[in-house]
Length: 99
Image (cartoon, rainbow, N blue to C red; front, side):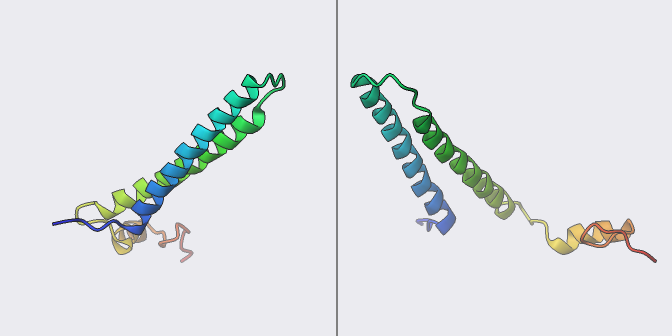
């Protein structure tokens, strides 16, 4: 049976392609600039590539966190986590109850 691609997985795959393309074009642009004898610095290329990878890192982190939560056997529900705090004298938001 074939598994259906989830929207978040498709977004991560497309973002991977965009980041790799941005990186490739950034290096190609830097090579072109050096090839034509540009003697200045290229921080704008480094910033563009770094920003793309930074955004990808954040997206991948959130995607894997989501996947971990979805693939936990039995999972953890809000009420189960809240029950432990309620027994220790705190409500579910972490604030101590006054009385």
